[in-house]
Image (cartoon, rainbow, N blue to C red; front, side):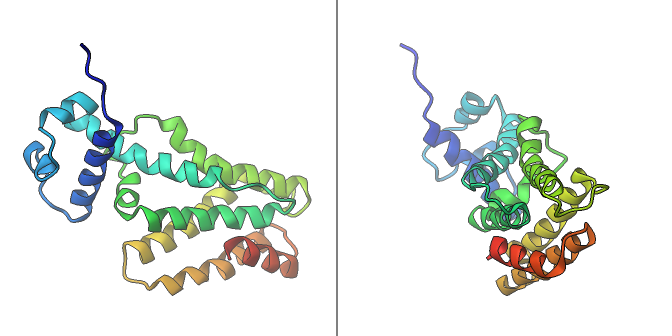
Length: 200
């Protein structure tokens, strides 16, 4: 009889590997499964070996981010939505600090690069909507502005979730994003209101 794989075991090993990476613990098959109640063979059963595990760990960060972003419902204010995407990004980093540190380790391949790229594309779509609505100038490059927005969110998340700044520093996102979106053509007072609502 074929034995079915248990998704809980797969999740357990991903979480354990992410925690060990964050703590900079030496990782071997034995140290990975130590105290988990599963055997080293589970790494081969679920991931085809340690390299497959690293890919899965990195991919899981994007999978969870995508799930968080999918819960956001677009409104009639695309600038607010753009800020809300950034806020959700930071919330995901706070909820999954171990995975967050691994998500952007380019030394490890992803299982599904397109799925990871889709998380950034959500920002691009919001910028495109803002252009269509006349909030951003016609010459605004959606990918460029989306990337700049992401840099702000990623920088703050890295410095607060896994770095030296207190959580209160996340509030810097509002003036930074406001300045960025004003530079793209949005009207200042309206922009400040939209960003504050989205980030709040």
